Image (tube, rainbow, N blue to C red):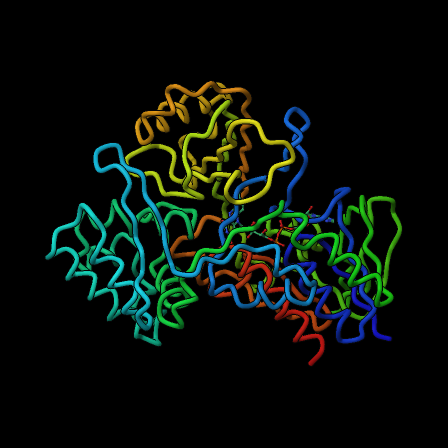
Length: 442
Ligand SMILES: Cc1cc2nc3c(=O)[nH]c(=O)nc-3n(C[C@H](O)[C@H](O)[C@H](O)COP(=O)(O)OP(=O)(O)OC[C@H]3O[C@@H](n4cnc5c(N)ncnc54)[C@H](O)[C@@H]3O)c2cc1C
């Protein structure tokens, strides 16, 4: 039985481990923490007893590799799929507006949805057809590789209103970066996957349970029931790479573990110190040295009474960008009032703020878009700042993200930051893990 060592027990590491265990490999996953899930995990909040994610995650119907992975684990029923693509927005002046895509074939359903969106003039809506046209192209890099999202949307003549009400919130949420920095290629690819395939692709998908419950324990069981192992608190301090071959991984304890194949499934900033310095003399290993991180802030507010019936909504004209209603999305441990989560992506300007200040901002913004929230009493709050939530996507990153195979023939790279063609997402991470597994099996 061939052996594979995987460093990192996030989505990428576990997806590769499950695929390889299924194919008959003996898999060992080494995870530095005492739990799996990496940047997509959940925990029990001691004060409330509620399950809390380290940041609300939204998926889409086009997350094919993710659903393949969850289907192997038997956890697809823990996801909530929309019947029809629908996103609500809350706006201080317009109130609630809704993008509801009719049951037309894709991508006409998106255009149909945009046409009915309130607060946008007819001419601006007609200009959305220019985006529909761009989604037909196959040569994304050639056509859009030199453009930021901002430049591309301007080129497609999207008005200020159309941008504020749809394109900018969608782009910031999916790319976790300012449209003036983020590359158009990534947005076009996301739009193609979501809106140019089937109409189910553009539906929003949320978890009915905490993120960890979706895949971590079931992955461990899947791997271990096929002869593999998942080792916790196993921090790797280096890959032993000599003679163009990975010879083993060195643990913090000083022990060396050996296998036939090795997958690094850690983020770029965690990988760099694990590699022998000499490797950085080659272009392949040097290329990602300028990758940087982009932060996400999640603010959890527990109220004494229900404030909204919406499951989630984009917030327009506010510093908060999205609201998620945990009482609609999943069943809470004990039900008292309402638990709302707010997200600020590409939150550079907010990471230095204190927890108290961020809660104050959240309350102010919430009161703007849902005035009746003024009457509710705040019972408890929690702020999670993920400084390294994703890599910062820019024009540069798309040419430096590495392939999953490396010049070292038994050493592979998985992770949302590798060259998946997608932004740093659950789908990108799982895809990278599946690609590594396919390369090894090949
Ligand atoms: C707040 C937040 C919100 C997000 N929202 C969304 C969303 O709405 N939709 C979406 O699709 N995506 C979202 N994402 C992105 C998604 O969570 C990530 O793309 C994905 O989880 C990355 O998985 P990964 O396996 O590549 O890396 P990670 O999850 O970072 O996994 C790497 C693992 O390696 C381990 N490790 C690191 N160093 C070592 C070492 N030396 N030895 C052993 N183990 C090590 C780490 O502990 C970790 O478990 C969000 C991310 C965050 C943080």
